[in-house]
Image 1 (cartoon, rainbow, N blue to C red):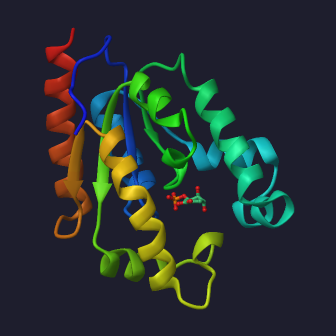
Image 2: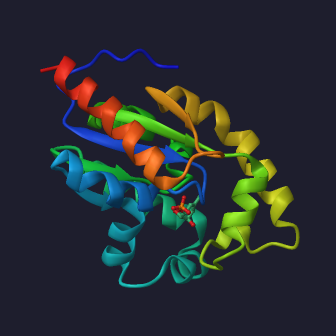
Length: 182
Ligand code: S3P
């Protein structure tokens, strides 16, 4: 896990695999910390003017990653935000460094079973629209887990925790971290 020493932290960044609850948690956390919530997928959709599934079918995953990296670069001077990110943001070289320079990075980690269960409730994730979603998740996770580890200041196991418990725990940790570095 990366060491927690850097310039003044000004944001909280949530990373992790699809369906681990990043955007929901960002929205739940932000008001209590006096921060604004922003989601990289939402910014991409806004910029492209179409949903993620259409972006993937029109310009492919690489085109989506270009947009994603562009959105991340534009956040670099942001302050006082809880930033939730797409699960694959760590895969582009350079993005981990950008993420780490933004503030405190929290990795939401879930088991494959929990991810399958949650992801099956929506069909807006093109990378999981496959014949064998469990296998797709396992393969993607295997290629990403080390990247999440590299990017994160803290890993949180979300399997057993309710969103209220998670929000409470992360808010405590963030308050401590923000206070300690001012
Ligand atoms: C992706 C995750 C999605 C979205 C896109 C690709 C990924 O975001 O960015 O479908 O590669 O893991 P969530 O993690 O919010 O589902």
